[in-house]
Amino acid sequence: MAWEDLGNKNTIAKYDLFEDGLALVGKITFNAAHYIDWVEDNGRIVKRYVRGRYAQLETYDHEWIHLTQQIGRGKDPYNQKKHGRVTHNKEWHTIARSHGLNPKGPEGIHTRPMRKGSPLDLFAEMHGILRPPGADTIAYDGKTNWAAIMLYADKPKPKGRSTLQKYTCPSCGMNVRVGVKEDPGIIHHKCSVEKGENVFFVKFDGREHTIYISNGG
Image: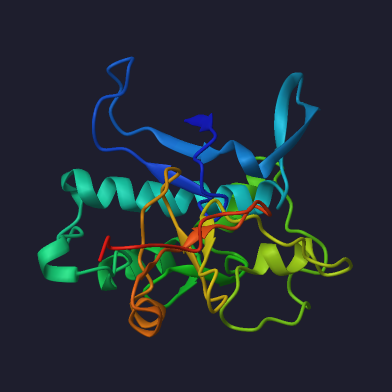
């Protein structure tokens, strides 16, 4: 197990099938972006997961199922040609439910807490990981992780910060976002046709930019 900044805050955790720098195979990495406050836990100083230890255990089991399914223990491990973008296939869902998880859809979102009395719930109780008060009475929407709903049940959800760069067409004001830091040199075809010259999207940073660059006609 490891904790690292995985870059995308929408990622909760990941699993690795290949050796890391320590030649370890099968590492599960939690996104450090979701861990705050150094706290004491049974004599250890650890980072606290914002959604709580019960949800953390669910996340660990979620990734563990992926990992064991892919390293030879699954009869139908994920295969891009066969399953496309559906990484949570039928076999994954079957195993997850047998553990007590309540995933839904191809995204495998835990829309409700693990089933009471299930193997994973009993494991949690055995290790002092208590079921969060109110977890069974919050208003589920059927498409959001239950722990995320609880986290913002009594306060507004903070707005996420996009890592994409915003560019705008200085002629018509259309905006686009791109995932590269350097200027991608995108031409807005419609405005270019109207002006008879290339109109480039420019970075939305409040500075003055060249509105269009002539073809040299």
